[in-house]
Amino acid sequence: MFRIGYLARKVAVLAATLLGVATFNFALFRVLPGDPIRLMARAGNLTPEAIEKLRGVFGLDEPLPVQYLLYLKSIVTGDLGTSLTYRRPVIDIVAERMANTLILLVAATLVVVAIGIALGVAAAARRGSRRDTSTVITSLVFWSLPTFWTGLILVFIFGVWLAVLPVSGMTSPASRFASSGTDQLLDLATHLVLPTITLALVDIGQFILITRSALVDVLTEDYILTAKAKGLSRRAVVWRHGVRNALLPIVTATALYVSLIVGGAIQVETVFSWPGMGRLMYDAVLRRDYPILEATFLIFAVTVIVANLLSDLLYQVLDPRVREA
Amino acid sequence: MTAGVPASARPGSAAVRALWSDRIGRTGVLLLAFTALVAIFGPLLFPFDPGAVGASSADILAPPDAGHWLGTDELGRDVFRATVEGARISLLVGLTATAVSIVIGTLVGLAAGYRLGVVDAVLMRLTDFFLVLPTLPLTITLAAVVGQSLGVIILVIGLTSWPGTARIVRSQVLSLRERQFVLRVRALGATDRRIVGRHILPNVLPLIFANTVLVIAGSILAEATLAFLGLGDPTRVSWGTMLHFAFVAGATGRGAWWYILPPGIGIVVVVLGFALAGHTLDRILNPRLRSR
Image 1 (cartoon, chains in turn orange, cyan):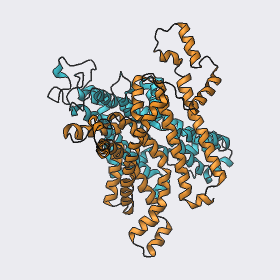
Image 2 (cartoon, chains in turn red, brown):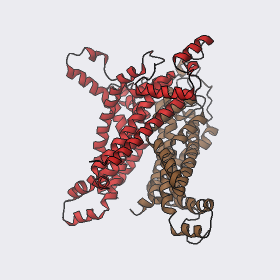
Image 3 (cartoon, one colour):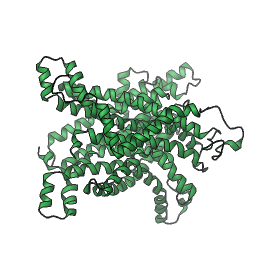
Image 4 (cartoon, rainbow over the protein chains, first blue to last red):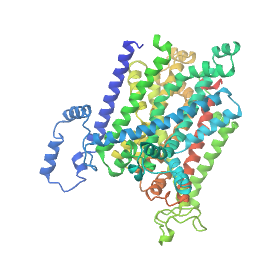
């Protein structure tokens, strides 16, 4: 299905990018802020001997290139250091949080893709109409909303004012004693509603605009005219001949979307105390827990980079021209 | 200028005229004019004193009244005056960070598109690298490690938002460098510096202009987000820092809508203004979209 050369090149670029991120991380956290021991001790009253000993423990007495190689080795082996606030291995803390963020991202993405494509297609199909213009303006308004502020407003309306939905965390304390699994699932679902709506509301604007402009492009093609001339229904022309071909630029925009939604997740998790990677990163910033900060950045970056590669590969599958070329 | 150069003498003024004649564009311009007036004259009429804290607990998170039009914050200070003051910082950071971003993006795009070869390959790999890094985690990490001052925030936002501009400029330069008028001045013996400065850059400018307006919107959102997450300059009032302190003080749970709404509406008004204007400019100036 893929040409070997193409695949090899993609994997090489992926490897180089990951190495770049690791190097960037190393430079940022080991070289730039100065002595990590001083940071760890928070300028505490360590004796020079104690500092020297700690430097040995963390391998900081080695020359910089050796430290760099040790750092790469530790990442590859999953050793992300020890959290300064939790006093536990970072990898364990991160492992507990990743699934929670994934639940949120998947829920929001499903909403964004389903509603975004429907609205984008509806606007592009009747380009220049009143409905098209209002869709574009509404999308720009949603795009302009700061995610965290939208979350605060929804907390205020549904959590404080109407008091109908939970606004904090993933589960109610009581649900831990719930008898059935369905009750627990229902509890999780109600906690998921507001964070998902917040995330979807803000990121859907861009998605609608991308879908719309991709389809507008396609609908000017000659084969669309041919399809119309064949006497196909408007619906068949737009969906079977239009949307199918517009999928390509939409898939290309996936990378942008993943970066956007990861940023949104950090804000939403902060506002709703959602126990995921984003909230972890926010707490790490407040407490200056550098090992956690470093690990969350690394994982977010790797996620987006891998998502990019996957969207590239999906493009190959969808577009026979690129596959053959 | 040499005959046959299609760049209009003043791309800016033509774009502004086109912007004004479009309904969406005009709405954007009006929103921006309003924000600019508030930012310039507001603090003169309603100066904000960060030390003017409340005298008693009744002044803490107090609802709007005749003395405080938009109530008070968690220290008993006037929310209306803080919001007006915040317009300045938000615009200042948005505009300067964008300047940093546009200068880097334009230089990288010009160099890559004009030089081609190794320069292009290296610069584009670098651009792609920055393009795939998730922006918010990147800016959070940089700001947290490097420090919290207005200068750092401006640099962090500027240094992470240029790849889009670089790509747009490069693709435009790629098509321009093969055009008749460029080939002609090159045949006449013009230096590279002159070709790029006098003939290519002026033709790229309209596109950069539309892109700039959208980058400003993004920069203002980025500043607000970083400040909300506790990475703003603690000594300056911006809409983001206001919302940070409101969030930390539990203003939502205490029903203090007057503390949450004004800074957020400020952000939406100015970002929407730039988004509407940028979207319209893009439609007018982008050669790929113009025909539609």
